[in-house]
Length: 178
Image (cartoon, rainbow, N blue to C red):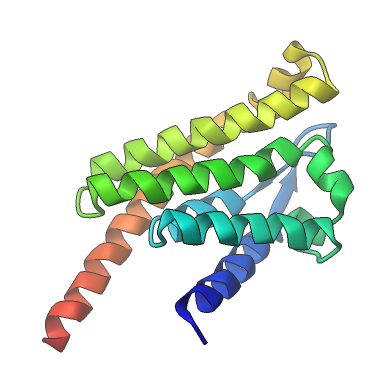
């Protein structure tokens, strides 16, 4: 099995499983999930092409009916609905991480956290853009940002820490094998 097929499988499994942990937050049906945490961590270890392919495939699989979105949901209506902008945001934020991490590396915690915070902002921008189409701007912020921004920052810090820790762990394995 090629590396891309393995990575593809892993990102679908990881992102889907983190989507099964959901807490309904607002009337719009946008849940709190750990999907962005999964996307951010996985994207930090993939190149931008792999990330782009895997996340677009994730959206396609969900759109055609595989239960990969939050709460095991699926369908084109999810992509076009209130939380769809966040799903599209995964592709942009994940690809952004894969590009930038090649420049900053994974060995310093603070730059990783800053990268993940910026990726979180990108995710919110896409989520709020689509939500603004569905609702007015004030309601979009009320339903799509205010209930989620603090946990978004927590997930960004966690993602940075996980990537940094995994990178250290992988480096120690590599140094032992030589």
